[in-house]
Image: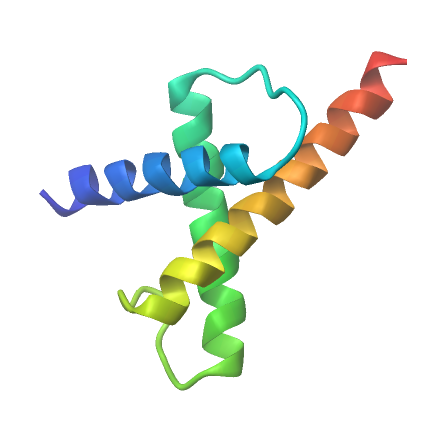
Length: 86
């Protein structure tokens, strides 16, 4: 059950990151979920460095950190895709 919740949270975070980031991203739902999961790990790690929370704790700072992390991962993916297209 925890894995299903983790995947659903990753999908929601990935969708929010895609909504925040300008431009068109051609990604499927599984790729969006992977984007959200990667962003959650990055954001959780950065939040854990700033606060006294653990990486996998569920809290408000972790949610915002997950969204910010997903936006950063999406920006990196878009930059790499743009560079490869030319």
